Length: 421
Image 1: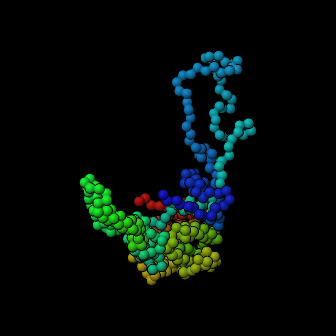
Image 2 (image 1 turned 90 degrees about the vertical axis):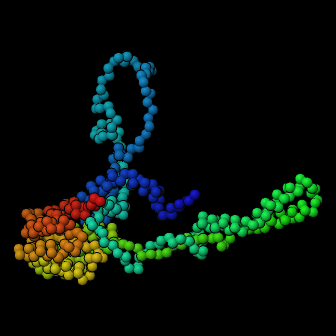
């Protein structure tokens, strides 16, 4: 029987096993609580833990009750008010045993069950039903990542890798093979001696000789080792390259003058959320940041979220740079390519047509998924209407509108929700 010992460090009066069981059992209620919690927090607080409340009625344990069954006539002692057949009036304030709000009455109620979700648990629930769509291209990555794979058995190894069953099987086979001849002769000698004992005395020289032979054969058989070093077999494991999906996410953000500070903050919140999601969910993923006004530049993560550079609006400059980076650094045969673009939709009229043509003819055939969010509280801008035509050619293009910071979470989840298999 195998015994598993959990040696994870646990705080005082805490049980990791019981906590995991509780989180699995009330997963639905906890996810609802997480969704309610994120509506009231800013993007900078999204990674913090959360106090979660679950109604007491949702954590009640089922129990068996014993009913009398049938019809019973019972005499209750001390009854001086009612006789058989009397009708009893309904109690005031309801006679149920529900656990609603008591108000100023003397009813006793139970508070909701409240516990603290850690940062890791909170983020796991928040991103659980999200994924990058169409993550299909895989390749054998560089030699830095391998996985152990069983490759039969070997005659040498460390004691921890001894394969007991295989070793015992070899030992049994060796004992049978080595002692087969002696065991056969032992049976024959015992049979001969039994036959002689029926006709002669025990001091007969033939019986004495057989007894010596039998003793010698038994000693020889007992001398066969139960387990010999040559019987030992060890599990053999080899390292093989581990296939993994490679993905690159391009984050394209408009920082032109038409993007006021509120719109830029909303765009940054969207991309911060996207960055947290990618960083947690995918180990082998690269993120490329592109900012643009009249000119587009590839920047670092810090510059992308903190730089205050601004200017006019030429969206096609970002798309030209995007196409250039893809062709130079990310082969479409090896990489799953994703693009997320945020803008207020304002652009030079002629440039919006150019953007649509670039997407339809050059960029969309290279990418797995393209998500565009337009941040405006008014009517959609000209870029929105041009992008609507892209969906007619490429179904893996999606666009959503963000009117206020409250729309960021729903739009993000809509763009990256898990697709039905």
